[in-house]
Image (cartoon, rainbow, N blue to C red; front, side, top):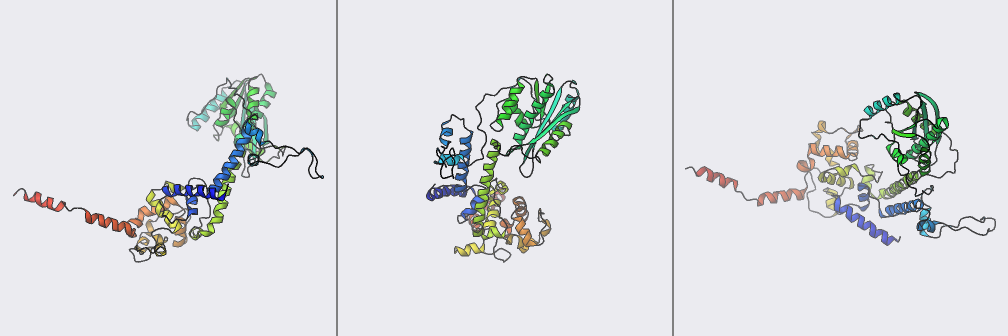
Length: 458
């Protein structure tokens, strides 16, 4: 898109933000995006492009978009550089967009095969009570039944593993584990359930099999319409379940259920294993997560480029930016206004009034000039030092206290409510003038009425 069009979108977004945020008109544009967690036009458009590419890969193979996204192949060899049959470079914007997300298997538009077996849902029950009920249910099972626990896990590096443990008569008789490629825990849970069912059928296909999972979303996919992510695992599970006696049951997670804890341990071990096929494609859920991570990274990179132009944010160490809803937006509008004004220095401060030749009062009632950090250094506030809210990080001096206070919106609100700084100690000059004019214009009727009431008895 042309720069002019992007600027128009940015202008629209900024106008919407200014209509919501209690900030002054001169507040820098870049800080508006950072303080609201709203992406810029360029970041939002690039994210839409990635999501459109995800949509192209996820539609049915007979969809018109799928056909248009297919690239042609070279028919002839070219000077030992390009073999015959190689794909041509993308020729259209649609083809370029389809190449942006991680490649994953195109899902099939298959009808869900709802199993006849019952599923024990949470029903908002207490997990501890549900765990005791589950353990009692497992003890009451006949000795011929097979109980298979499956789980998925993801380590700090993003590796996803799956594991399962099969029990009969309270004893573990089989187990398995493995690792997936670019995937999510959801995919690991589904893969673990598929492998657990296949292994249980190998042990005794004629026995009653119970598949116990702690993820209700996976249970819904196993018993209903197969989700887009890891669809092959869900469909194969449903196909096998049509031929054997299978019951899918919810097992409360992290409640000291032996089989569930064992499956979780095996899944964590699976994350450390080597992938059997490194060329395996990603899953839909992982591709979707990658798009979100790309959007967040673009927004962080944009803020890092814009940060040097905003010295106040750099001095306060507000160097990070996120697209999650900032905590400060839950504050009352008056407190939020003061917080954002202190960050941007665009507020009722001496430097601001001098810059724009305002005639407002530039001094606090204590005699010092108005600055953002004067909120902490004012001598009238210093008298209340023992009542200041405690911060997460213990500051060494008042300067550090100010820097940490501005980063913690909840503590900032408590500080203002306790000191009433902008109400009593350092009020806005225009607000004070308005209040005085209002009080002067009020009719004084209370005194004559009182005199009249006292004179009436005589």
